[in-house]
Length: 156
Image 1 (tube, rainbow, N blue to C red):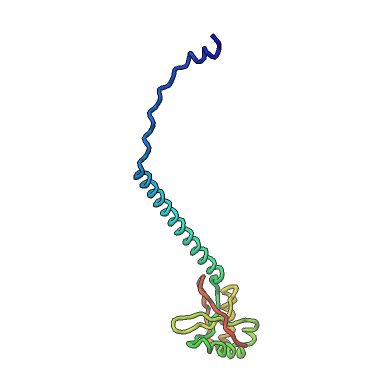
Image 2: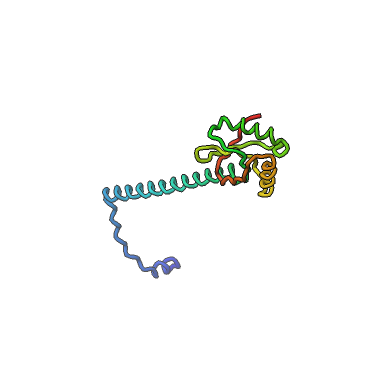
């Protein structure tokens, strides 16, 4: 016997397995609908996560744009259009203490705060409050919160 014949003689044939039943058209349709529903749910979850990340990024950008800062409040006023003239009067009366400083504004209840700053340290803010007090200007320190928009006041 040839070598190949000897190898083939030692093999036992396997039984054929019966063919698996194919799914019906209704089962295929149901499976397709289920897969589409799962894909839609996954897409909705992904869209929600993307929107949440975008909102967090926008909030972080706003906080970077308007960080918490320290200011000196020199006046308040109901009318925003009157703040530049109030600033000009206070600045002209206190040229030495306010030299090189600009005015800013932030809403406060039904009025607006007129601010000078931002200050680098609480000691710097306190020194300016004391210098203004010597010339009769009632001032106090004010800390803006992170994200709170402080707007520049126009004027001379």
